[in-house]
Image 1 (cartoon, helix red, strand yellow):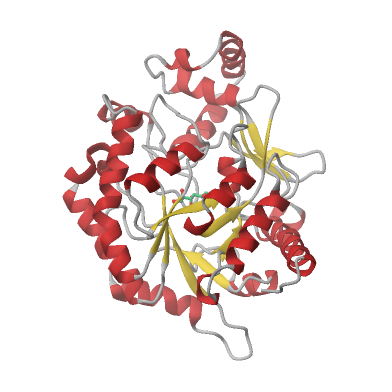
Image 2: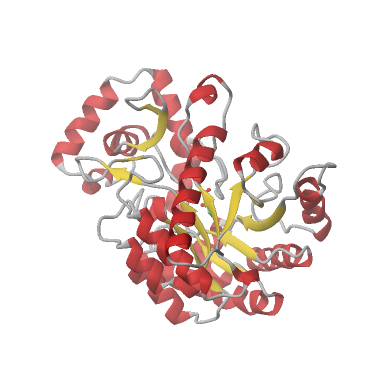
Length: 398
Ligand code: DNO
């Protein structure tokens, strides 16, 4: 397996030397400054690649191996193949990426909001902090801040009562912070930051789009882009919904094994792959991750390895240490190591330690939420230990 690290560019507080010291050899990155929907150019990608791959004398090289993400604009999700200009721009970006020798691209198809949390610095008993999705605070946002029509239908009576109490205890500053966290796009998001009025407007544009229609739009998107990906030798990896269930009354179509199975059946092209994100998929108790890693093995070109722990209410979760969540990480890694062994060296699965806790010196530094240096370094080191153990015990170092 190839060890990678997400890097947000020159403004990232984590430097490329930090990445080298963490032990990763591959970089996962994107042109974060290009507005969503605008085509990337060959030169733009080349400039970013040079930042990563121009190695100072005496340092070990890093390679930009995965693009995460080329954002899929909102109109593609609403209109499918009718969003011709957005799809053409996406294909142009793909061409620019492939022209620079990058052959794995991650994307997602979550409507309106990319990954969602309610708390970015939730205190853990050891003094570190974690990302968290608190369903009561989320319900408070939906019912009393966004005031979405029918939101209460998505929450049971006990949750509604707790959400009301949580909302009543919030100061205006707490409310502003919750809006910022939920609506204004977390790091790496592929959706635009929204104010509350803009959020309501976006939601209204989705009227009539149910699960079947959204899936159909994703299939149409894949039917349009996979022939180009095939021709260019690029693997497209669909990131799961995070969390993997409907939010804001909108459908989500990359949450379960059945979702991915349906997509692979509809668009069998080998370019149609999955970004195997254990933290996202693991939020659902009915996702059997080791079984999914085996079933979808040949379609996995990229993996996000992190763990989440479901809380007592069944809907809240927080990010745990990489080996200590609900996911059976050792068995997932074993399936990925075995899949990697069946492939030629150039197609080894690339993984990154996703989201780390905020801990040690990072507690007093300015950090990118989830993308701390030390928490991710700890996660990568733990994962590397698991991989080395499996490879050694199974008798093949790869
Ligand atoms: C969050 C990430 C997301 C993810 C995109 C994939 O940490 O997992 O930003 O990269 O949704 O397209």
